[in-house]
Length: 566
Ligand SMILES: Cc1cc2nc3c(=O)[nH]c(=O)nc-3n(C[C@H](O)[C@H](O)[C@H](O)COP(=O)(O)OP(=O)(O)OC[C@H]3O[C@@H](n4cnc5c(N)ncnc54)[C@H](O)[C@@H]3O)c2cc1C
Image (cartoon, rainbow, N blue to C red; front, side, top):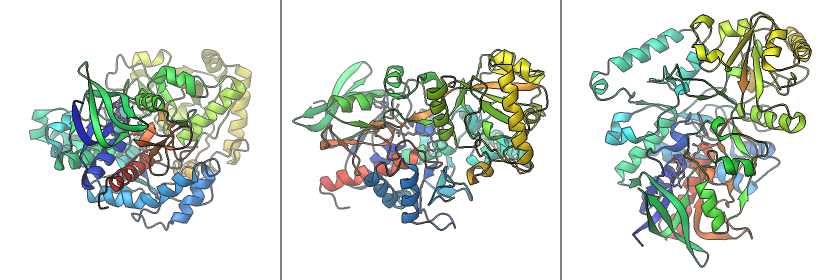
């Protein structure tokens, strides 16, 4: 054996780092290994939100019972009661722990759960990280994964969630928000001499930055460019890992446990084809390229682990953007909010609507899956909008036309990304949809916009829909007629924020084998483990919530097993 530690944590996303810091605070010596040259995983590129019911940070009354009622209702009828109970119990404790480390969070008042009409639903359970000064990380600042371009202004100035909302919705005073950011960045003279990367860590980078700082304070080692290839197991007990580092294979022994926190299989096309229920492409995923390729899943299965929820992903529709002439825009971008706006609708390739377009992104993705299975004409589908939408709202990097008129859009965006036509019939012909069907769909939709009642899909009925609606649009803030030429179309792919099927674990995050017994010494957290929620995404922060909470629980269980005082 080349090296020996107490616990090996595979993966440096939020799940891995929470586990490592907590293990250290409970008296164990963890080692974090990370396959890529950057730490932070998808977590660093994310919004950094965590879904924490009963969190004590908001004035909104909440309770364990209310949260359980909600989860039980939305997660396919109590999918995993044991894990749901563990989640709700540990959520406020984990939050207190993060805050004690200096990783601060705020709630966004009124931010609704994603099934806002379900029993037990509430608001203010989604918490977002407070910004952090990256200078506190010293040289490690430069090894953290970057935010995607959607969370930065001009791919340069870091945005927090509030600023992201203000700019994307062009809220009153958005120009001041932008001006202040730019001024602050350029007057940071000493830092500007060092690097063009904004030292203001926001969203997922604030979460990962805070955790990395806690690791540095505790001298917890992090080894980059080191990937787990196999688990070492003897007589049913996992006691180490084989890794590949700089083309050398080595073995590391863990006296207490191995924690798999290496994300899902979203970047592995073969595993996607095998497990996801409809054909998808890894390039539609919004996660870092080539990072999470299902290594933890394969290593776990090789030692007899069971799996669950393998057909599911954290869906977030995405669009492919030709960015040859626009280097500061990512090639794949999420449509988190774009399809919510009035004066637009989404149709499958037959020209039919299939979803309440104002629903949360995961439910939109699920509707794409269902419609693909039914009609065979979804995945991809189309977002259709008119010039009123074009004037008022953004669609990914396409800013409203008063900021970015059509003739100022990059030329290559007109080559398959954004389609424009003078009439609905012409637009339908351009995108290969039957013109009569599309015209009928839009006529019916415009009738709903006129009455304010979407009789087919209930768009604008729920609290979530209205939270993101346009208050200036009456009688329904989510429904506006699609009638002012020219008309536009953007293709929507079935993107994701990661897969949610993984190794089956118990409520202490221990991996279970196919007989339902625990595999000694092996834990899985984050997207390496099957989601506790089955096929649902309960609210903003619904993936980092379980990732951090079960990492916290796993550390506690490992420390208890090692005889540490909790
Ligand atoms: C744009 C965007 C916004 C998002 N916003 C939110 C949000 O606000 N709230 C929320 O809850 N979720 C959000 N998500 C989803 C969320 O980021 C992920 O579900 C979450 O980060 C997964 O965490 P993890 O720790 O399991 O994996 P990751 O953060 O992906 O970390 C896994 C790490 O393991 C490493 N690794 C992989 N294989 C190996 C190996 N063999 N050996 C060693 N290391 C390995 C990877 O390189 C990676 O660094 C968002 C996602 C995206 C893309």
